[in-house]
Figure 1 (cartoon, rainbow, N blue to C red):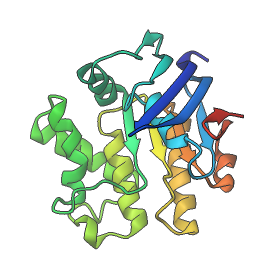
Figure 2: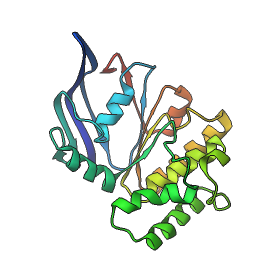
Figure 3: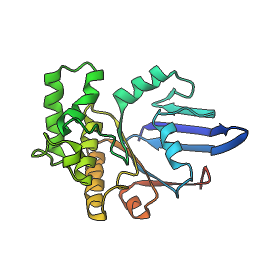
Length: 222
């Protein structure tokens, strides 16, 4: 497998007034292309911060982060945004859907920043919503969808720019266990299609879907 991500002695420190909070403490790890990786840890362990650093949403206080062999540790926000827009699809626990837009319009949204025409975006969005079983719900707004349907809209949105990597922060956190299994099966299928999948979770039942588990506690990889 080719290496996708490499973290070397990564620290993330926040200063809250006079208090120094060390959220990541010398983390070193690698993720290969095509892997399904789970980052497992309790609340407050630093796992979401680790995910943000791994997915170019944030940069470390110190240490080195390489994405596809390129050092991204000190890139500007515009440079990081370019990588995120072209390479990484995000699925969040809170769905992050716009309530006044339909499922179709929510999925189209990322294409507006990548040079697609409206017609091209609509065609792609329809295809991806169909692929996650929502062909009959594309004109419904988030308030008219179940939690599981909203999460599948979020997954379709994460796929619209054909990213190499799918990053999911607690993807089953706001759905019931039965729906959670369906969400994980969708992510598993995407991995089989060649996507690198990285999830963050506190749920030990989900790690069975992953090729590899990274355990984190108190900001350190165990």
